[in-house]
Image (cartoon, rainbow, N blue to C red; front, side, top):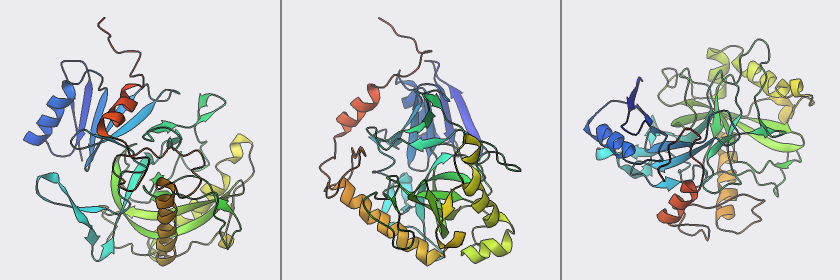
Length: 335
């Protein structure tokens, strides 16, 4: 998919992924009319807006709906993917691909990159930011023979690994984050892209004593998606891929002076059915979180769409959150 790039009259760089149409031109025109918009990218039904500079502590990537309303990628993007109807309006029923339920994945880190991007769970509207170490942007080391992350890495929205819930097998509690997912598809995605994935299995990683599940999935639009329907299919069709995944997660913190990570189930991947049950469990924990039925653990639950949530805010309140964040040192200010 070739991105189309345009320079607006305000000097804003606008990038649109997908085919260029009259509706795309409308989006671009609207973007150019908003002076604080620095970067706009259409991803399925969602757009992203950058604040601050990439690879700096002030970098933030906020999410918007196709009609320009700010949302939280953590709380407002549905866990299960939706069908597309005419005029790009999402339907209510889950999308099925060959009877397979698909899940939305928020891409945080593109494959082969090193910057440790993550959903800022403790900030209003939960933008993507770069993790920090001692006040500086954090990068993962290259673990030979790999370069950066070896898959597109991100999270399933509307899930939460509850630090108050102990896993029976590992005796470890959740890590207070949405559940992580590795897209093993061939396409290199972009930070902030929302893709639909097919779940294949799951790995039980223990990170410094915390349960940190890693869902293994594949982009539903990947050419190999039709051939990969289980963790055994991955093992058969991609020799060494699963073993490399375990080794990467085991050692990626060692260059930073930390010990190797450990795993439940002796480092063996569990199958799709097991993975789906874990996802369902973390979704229920998330539901309790946004309904204030459990300790939030510092999580910011501000959202615009969860009807039963006391943390729900208005469109105007969401806009004020983003507008209060610094745009860029390169921006002109007319005073």
